[in-house]
Length: 291
Image (tube, rainbow, N blue to C red; front, side):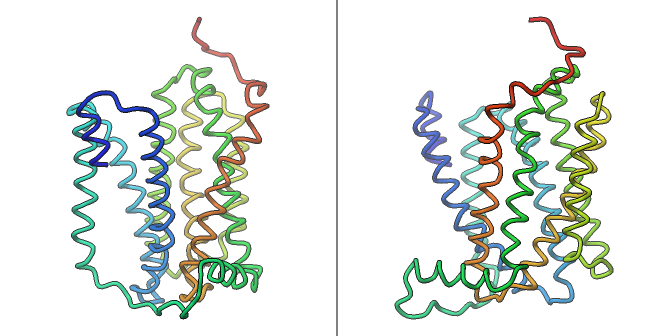
């Protein structure tokens, strides 16, 4: 982030460097996400795990919402390069604070175990149970379900006269619903068995998307965006609890990597499949601005 900001201070940044920075950011996330997935269940007592996971997810979603709004304000007030400097410094600050957290000890990898041996061991472990093998499938379809919205929502908002502001408000309310749903699940704690929520939550998500396709006004879409966030929060928590309580801690990293890899493929694959037909999907032309 700091390197990119220094380049931005000197003038326009080459598109190739932006792509390279995006690739490196994704590469870092590929290591960070599976490592982070195993921290909470090792730090929190099992009886409080669902509450803690809901709080963690809700806090993350609140900060995404605050960060999106605050980041836009920061770029508007200071410019892109100073905002990137602030971003880079924040990463360094948290890197300095992280050693103050006493992370749980973990066992060392078996002597002589290579990458492919470890990869196959994680895959073999995931295949032992239909439940653990189904986790990546759940995550894949959850991400794939959002692909049509990402592709068609801008055109739909334009057709309804809401434009870019409506598009931003829709996803802002979606994030707000995610945060509210996560905090609600944390408040309910063990009174709700989150692991059993995956099937009804998927059914509710499908119903919400179907209702979304039938909307005729932006207000209806905004209300359903919040509901979709609530349902998705329950589904996310269900997947997390299955992972944390059914996967052996020894395999958190390997199964977590498999889960992340398959889930991340959901949206781009769905977009590729939808791309040839997206422009032929009929949309309401009501309130479409003149060219």
